[in-house]
Length: 393
Image 1 (cartoon, one colour):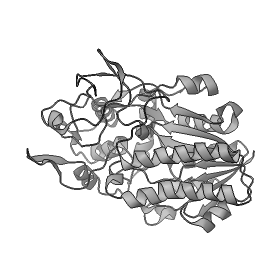
Image 2 (spheres, rainbow, N blue to C red):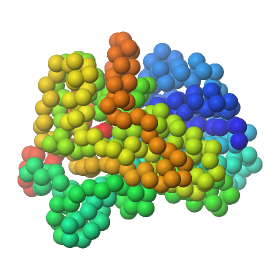
Image 3 (cartoon, rainbow, N blue to C red):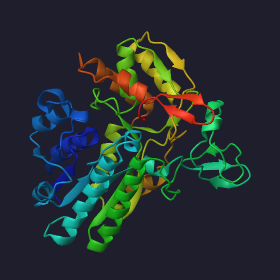
Image 4 (cartoon, helix red, strand yellow):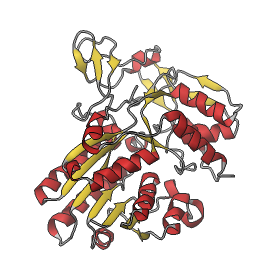
């Protein structure tokens, strides 16, 4: 299977995957709509991700997954489709609902409709799923064992209690690594659309006799991620603020944590899913299997940049944020021999070195993105009042 189409392939993960596949001898086609939020108004000038596609002589199709003719042109002659194309941003999905559903669900439905009703040569699909489908994830209650907490209560967080609670007895629970068979209960429109993408592709793959694999990516980071898109994650946001000597506003108590997985490890996992027969009809977590709390991220970046910013633990919070994220990667290790090579301290150093070599950036207004995360408690009877629409890292 030598011909591979990557939808959304000019993005962070897609562009890195495309380069590696090209080097390995695959015929790679990238289809991307070059969203201004990711690539800027003039991608030829403002998007290193897009320029890397062109510089590596990778076939590029400017097109949208919501356009039937674009998809037909891109699918022609392909053996494998890696489906990355999606609107991303959990908070943004809560107020741009139609756009997220149209692209993420509608675009995937169009792909499957074409594969079901048109002639094609596609033998395998790898779909990018997300940690977001797990919601708060998997926890343990001393009395009730493994439980899956719902959204945390506003009243608790206003009072400084950010712990997840047992849905049965309301006691504090301790987090566990989230396995692939954990309960699926997304807490954002984005998470719901990723769940729908995964379910549709895994279902229709079997129905159509096309091998399908779902990869549930955790928090992917590394050199090459967008520094001009304020919704790409806290590493970019914090880096920009430190570079400008602006204070870092740490939400909650700073102990909320994420599973950060380095881009090279993600690319390796994705190539294994493409190449290995045993991956078919399976779903895998792709993470580091380690957690890092947000306060540690801020302190590490400050140290590596030798920054002068002040770190402020504000106690602010956002309704819909999860407390912890930690993936169990046993299954992908057993099936695909995946073992992450980069620990966070090494990966973050590579990221910082790359940022330092980027020179002057045309940053989007990060202050605005931070404001979008803000909530204030104005009326006990009304709860949290969003100042501006919220966004989540």
